[in-house]
Image (cartoon, rainbow, N blue to C red; front, side, top):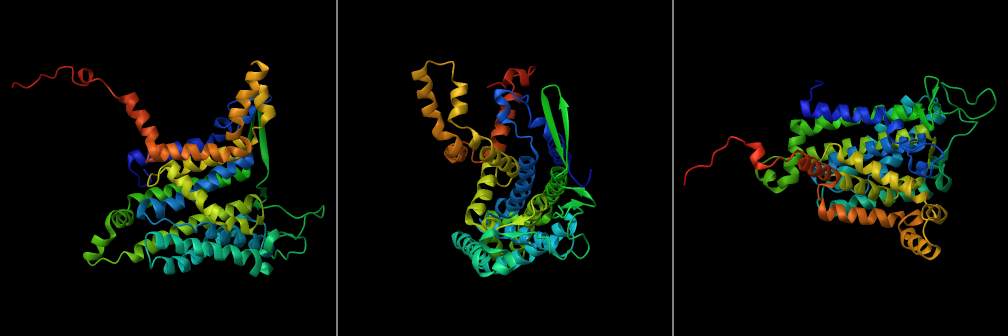
Amino acid sequence: MLGLEKKDFRLLLIVIGLTLFAPFLLNPFPEGSEMAQFNAGYPDLMQRFVIFGIFAIGFNILFGLTGYLSFGHAAFLGAGSYGAVWMFKLLSMNVLPAIAISVVIAGLFSLLIGYISLRRSGIYFSILTLAFAQMSFALAYSVLTPITGGETGLQLALDDPRIFGAAQTASGNIPVPALFGLEMRSSYELELGSWLFTFNTGYYLAALFMVLSFYISIRIFRSPFGMMLRAIKSNQTRMSYTGLNSKPYTLAAFVISGMYAGLAGGLMASMDPLAGAERMQWTASGEVVLMTILGGAGTLIGPVLGAGMIKYFENIFSKINETILHGWFAFLPDGLENFVVAMIYPFIGKGWHLTLGLVFMMVVIFLPGGLVQGGQKIAALVRRKKPEDAKPNATEPAE
């Protein structure tokens, strides 16, 4: 089905189901309850889940298949965002041309950087990509201010030409990104008892692109091209001894990965038409590395899981403060309550990075294959049978 093996097609269906029913799955607690703050089913966060999932899927094609660790992918994310915003300023507020140009710009930019960086491998390749990303950040932040908006970022304005669209709405406001008249910010709310579910247009558009990106990544992983990338990761030196030039393959993987990052950047600008230099910082590049390793580098669904987990920590755990903790442990005696809150508080709120760091450390030590390996181990424990159950009629051989 769709050129996929049965196992891969089943995995694709799982991803489609998760994205389709995300508003329900991410809102398990009733509105107004003490646990409602752990709900993640609001549009902005759901959009971030799928957009950074695309970013991580693309990075995994490079790092997971070839082993080349890039610390400069944020440059392509930022380039895609800038390209999309410029399309909104010059052409129209239709998101499709903006997303298309963001992929093209990121692809050309990654071709240039990849051609130079891939002359080296290992740590030298990583340092080169980091250097290019920091140069891109510096250019966007100060040197190319007329193009990038500098410190304040590139924003829409009422005097933008927008050749094929209205410069402003009937009420005199700046128009918002839309898909043939359907605004990205438009939402429908469904109330079922104490639960409130939000279905957002922008989220489902981004989810559609994520499903397509995931499908393409499966085809790449299972293709002869993907097998060649795995061979490069396994032993590039031995491949060179056979007379095979691996550079075109690694460059192609680098460009594809950069185009995925550009797609994520274009979708970010489509949801919120603003592009800033901070998207090109090295911290953004490091974040996608963490997402991929945490979920499982070289796996199909791992990067999506890693992106979701990090964004959940960033947006949910960071909101828990001392007042909320005191409400949770109010049943304890005052002295014990204060002690428990004092012990937990450094790991949440502003200290959510500490918790994420501990989780990442435990995953690297105990689950080198990431969250996917953890899920496989749990599944193996569930399916495991006793030897006598597995072969009830087996007889021992004579000695």
